[in-house]
Each structure stands twice: as structure tokens, then as C-alpha cells.
Length: 125
Image 1: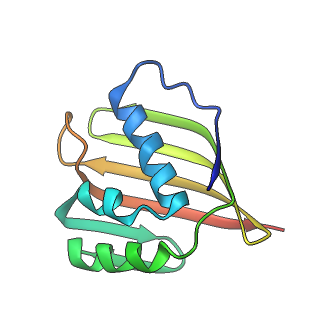
Image 2: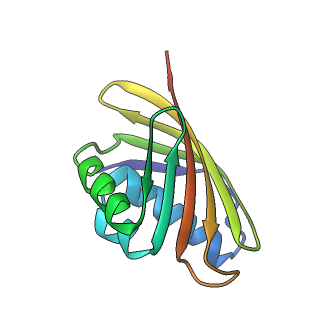
């Protein structure tokens, strides 16, 4: 079970709630939830590491990652505007600490279907 702390102000925003749920799903290995919310032409760029183009490639990558769950997730902020959103925080996994920032693009201004995600992840030493 991933310990989760939310410092972000969700301010009764359904999209911010969704981003929080998405981050929790990544941290806890809930691949089904994540894949359910992406478009067929999903693009995921993990800067400095890899790129996954299309829902099938994205799904494969997410299902491989579900074995690596976080011991702790801290979400510092979530920002949303129109078709875009961002979140940042930190995760502790296997005795290592990582900080992250994800930039999301949705298919529209309403709904929760992602079409692009840019991830920046750094190990804190």
C-alpha cells in the first residue's frame, strides 16, 4: 500500500482530482486505470529515457511499470488550465527517492482522456 500525502490544492476541481488519481495510480501500479484514460494516439515522452507512441506502446510500458510500486507518494502541486495540466511531487521506492514533474495534454477542455504526457524524473541522492 502506497502512503500518499497531498499538498496540492484540489479546490473542488474534477480535473485536479483526476490528476491526483492518475498520480496515485502510477505510484500504486494501477495500470488498468491509467490505460483507460488515454487516447489511441497517446504520446508519452519520458525525457532523457524513452518515448512511447500510441496506446498499445503506452499500455505495454505502463503494465511493465506496475511491478514497481512506490512506498510513498507526495504530490506538491497540480495546475490545470484548458486542455493542459501539470503535477509535481516525489516518490520513495525501494529505498530511493525520486522527484517528478508531469505535463499533461488532454483531447479536450472537458473529460479525462490524455493525448500526451511529458515526464521529468530525477533521482535525489
